[in-house]
Image (cartoon, rainbow, N blue to C red; front, top):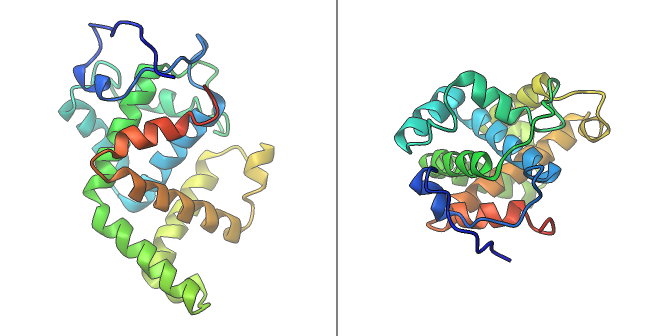
Length: 200
């Protein structure tokens, strides 16, 4: 159900491209906060200048009023409860929208790379060939595993389920597929609604 409340006239206009959802006054649900951060983590595995490009896009999309600098970006991402330095502050709907719009824009820029990696994985799966036989796919998954282990709290039960390389590879590939889902014309809207599926 889409909220019928009037738009916040002080908010950047681009946020209106995503519908307001009737979420709690405490901010976005736990699952939503986790998913947004993990999607950005996957993008960082694909893009060596991940954080810099997020901040640059924040300015380009006129979202710098929400994501002012690197510290604020870090604080927003640390609303993910799986993080080592998880923040107890809420993630507002506007903040979540800003991160989703930026993530989709970054994914769109890397559409070719994402498609190639997923096609390569499909070929490996069809021939029952280990992922390690693909240097390119292995490189990106290695980067994803390193990012995940460096940033997530190993004492969290959900993080423990991704202890093995195989489980983290599965998560990385699932996120790459989700990134491809973001690259279409209606990608931001589809991703936004999916993040709240079953939550509102």
